[in-house]
Image (cartoon, rainbow, N blue to C red; front, side, top):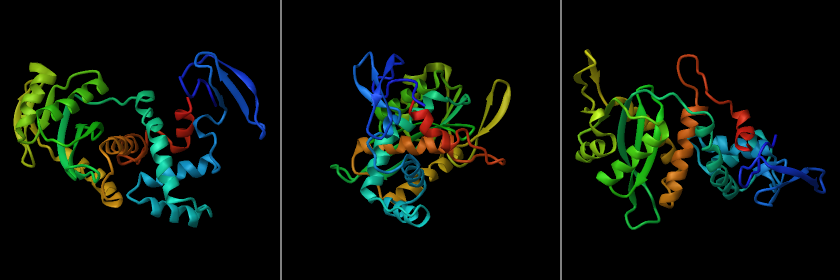
Length: 276
């Protein structure tokens, strides 16, 4: 159901006739543009359910051609693998809005780690994927850069601070020197920076003995690694940031977590959420 303009998100719109198929059209009173009740799924010859199934399959460790083979087998429809990729690129930015519609409750203990990824159409074929997560194994934010320096670490810390709206009490990283200065510049003295890798570091925080390691971040890094193995890297840096964020939304909201295998958002509700 449409409750705002799909172009400018204004709730001020009026009905504006029907198209040849009888689909209700609307006109926005703010941007003066027209749209229909299909929202962002308008002008697609394939049904919405098929498009969403293709996007969901692509979020798994599977290639675009693998998505087409699954659709051909189970839905008896065979779109082009280029169409599948275009659908993901078009609707990924809308699916990312789920993070603002349904924010998560992040903990005060954050972990950060970086890993190599491949970006083909660039001077340097390799880049760095930065991932900030909390102690509950929720991914807070991601960032892809060509350099592993203080500026890149500061960017991902600022994105994490903007996403959560608060500063962490403890920041756990490995021994990269860029983390020390970036943490001090972004979080100040109120955040305690702990350097730990696989072996836990013992600290006393709020009169409690804690054992902290960066194994949580190392384990979360395995999630995008499976996707990167299937798609064999990215073409450009902006596409890398977009798709990694898309995979993050799937990990936080759509992938089952815990012993009860619960998900935070049902996939069937995603078209309704992104059409708002």
